[in-house]
Image (cartoon, rainbow, N blue to C red; front, side, top):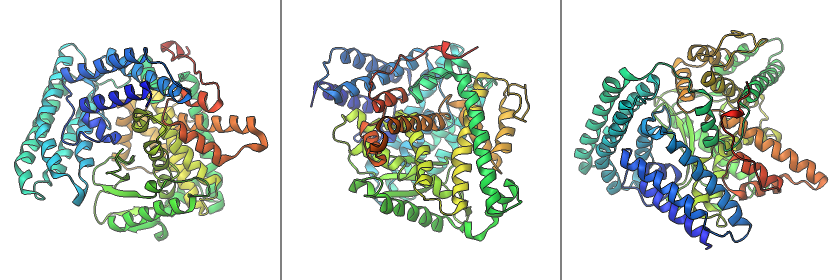
Length: 556
């Protein structure tokens, strides 16, 4: 180990001890019986850790190319963490998908491994929940006294999440007798915290959701690790959406000559060939899709390490969508795809499922994040930090969906249309909506949608219904709440995909006839997780991305 590796390892150990909820999501072993302190002392300790580690990093001499990259990646991450701390975001932050309440819920969800569950750790974590919620209450109350509070919709959604977590935890009591009392106390704490959010915090929360360019660019720095001209990216999002919708219309016309796209979608939704009744049968279906992709791609287009040939698909009863979690660093938890199914007998439409599974499984997240976990040339921070780089991760996932089309895996045109609808179209719409709503930009002329008006959440709702097919009201609400809670996360998919495609095309031009796609992918995955500017620099060989911009990157 080099001195840099040693510093990175110490940082991971201390980080995991200070933030067990994040450690659980990242697959860092050793903190299974703890929860994060979201109180003022916990926030200060995490800020101090980032500051101390950054200072120590300045005194470490790099030994070779791997150290050079590792130092640059760690420095960028620490500086970004400190920028968020200095902006005071953690003191009042609540969010629909990845806020402190949701992180607490994930900590229990991930610990529940059925018969493999560590019940001692589960009991300890349940006992720690009331204290963790008390600390979060203290932070939110202090921030409120200073006039800082999240938007009302994020406060209310977090209260709803408390009740959903309570419902899940209540079921644990019947599985183990020794859990009855800690479950009761944990559920009581969740009920009380939900009441605090709705009764004490929500009346003071502001109705305006837009966070503005300064806060948005901090999100770009955090989630993407790149420089963006936001107005150019907004215009590009509109162009991408129009291009994808044209491609979908052409494909639909080939499938049913003379029929409009909505007619084709309705026909596919009603076709028994693309419907599965029951959660258990659907779980078998997605597991079979995942396993087949591994079998067919391994040794041909990718070399898949043996531990990654196992991908576990699981169903979630809550509205968490579809998501992937990398294997734990000690492989005690396999790479897992979670898919929301609301009822055991639900009938599920499947024509859009293959593209999503390629995104979440192989060659998408499971291959990329799992490869990082197993990559012995990376230090420990690099191996477990994929969750900190949505631009790198989600960009690859969307790239993987498109790649499988290039490799001939959408032989059924319905599956191709599903990839375009759920993968490409939705993610392009997110670029338009996320930037548009947070910056309250005008809707351009020629779009055919409320031209000249400025974005509001209500227009966002209407836009999703108009451009992203027949969506349930709950789905649309979740999407809008999600975008407004985490500025710039939603654009990580499409902007990240653009970075991967641009890097591949640059490598193809540079290498000419010698370009080898499998070798390009191997090199790209061996680099490990990083921000998009660093990724471009390393793949193109200059190793020197420019400085992270300030708010001046927004034109006009």
